[in-house]
Amino acid sequence: MAQLIMDVFSSLTNCLFCFPGSPQLKINSRSFKILRLLGEGGFSYVYLVQDTSTSELFALKKIRCPFGQESVSLALKEVEAYTLFSPHPNIIHSIDYNVTSAKDKSDPGSKTVYILLPYYRRGNLQDAINANLVNHTKFPERRLMILLLGVARALKAMHQYRVKGGPGGPTAQKKARGVRSEAASADQDAARKAKQKRRTREQEPQDEDVEQEPLMDGEVTRSQEGVGEGEVRAYAHRDIKPGTLQAVYLSPVLNFRRLTNKNPLYSPGNIMIADDGKTPILMDLGSLAPSPTPITSRSLALAVQDTAAEHSTMPYRAPELFDVKTGSVIDTKVDVWSLGCTLYACLVGKSPFEARSEETGGSLSICVLGGDWRFPDENGAAQRNGKSKARTAEQQQQQREEGAVSERVREVVRRCLKVEAAERPDIDELIALVEDVVAELPVEDDTVDD
Image 1 (spheres, rainbow, N blue to C red):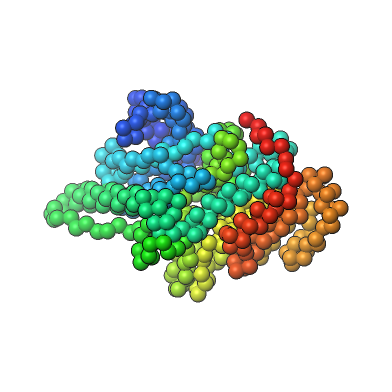
Image 2: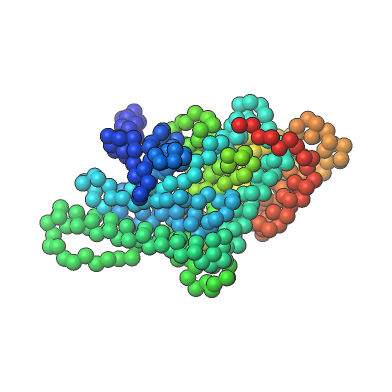
């Protein structure tokens, strides 16, 4: 109870100190009015803000960086990645960002990062899933597969990124490196201030500070060193998901609910839906990692596994990230797995492994590692053994009439959810597969409800 009270007090004071005395703030040269809190989790808060000059709405992400060295770099890794892949119609872009020193004198090394992002009034894919569950409705399959195709094309830009040849070319790469340089400078400044505070407290001689280059775990642009212009420097997102029913940030479609995001089962979605209701927008690139990653030692295996446990949401996490083996290679196929789980969640309402673990009472991780999942109307043993019977044309027509999942859409899920990564399609194969399914599905009414 005491901890709960402290959490509530911390949340309230953080909100009060964000914008003291006025519901407005400045990001570089632009002024914004704070309208409301959209969501929070960990050390970050997301606000709906309005430009005081144009009245345009934006989402403002505020990230507290209390740990000094490295924390600003981790916060700005997201901006760095957005910049690198911009412009892309299915990847969010950061409109502006700012790094400020905290006003808390007790922690002179702390910083605050503000990231200005587009605001999508329709929320994320999980909002749509939740609305379907509440209203007893389903996604029209063709529209859903078009959404999936958009996410796959966003992943293609990451999986096949070419140095100085991405969506934004050399200009985007230069801007991304600029973000990284600013993050490194901010971290060095935070480290100096923290060191000075320790020396003052301990009454040590004020020797000249020695600057140390901050560690850049999972850095984006630095991983391009040694890769020639035009050559592929692949990246994996590693946390594709619609969200969860108990999401930390449920956007405007459903009521906001605050829960801890320390448990990887509970996480906000990162596939937004643009205002046209048809275009998916991939966001939250903080989990982005260079790919492939050869696991050359036991220590590296444990490090990758720990990072996945922290940044890759459990019900959508690929099996090779649950138990990382020395001598294995972690590649972009982890995103194909997560996309398969996401498609299943859109069809059924939850991740296939959440559904199966709830049904059996077993461990979610065991279900993932064993590939133990099924569609609700399938025999579990046959599904686990990969022996699902192909349905006749008559049966498929009956399925469509009953609102069941069509066989071609089921097959996309099955292809993605192969336990062995080598058996999954790569992103080009997946895009071709989805395009074929879209072409075969009947054209539906394209009207999207507001």
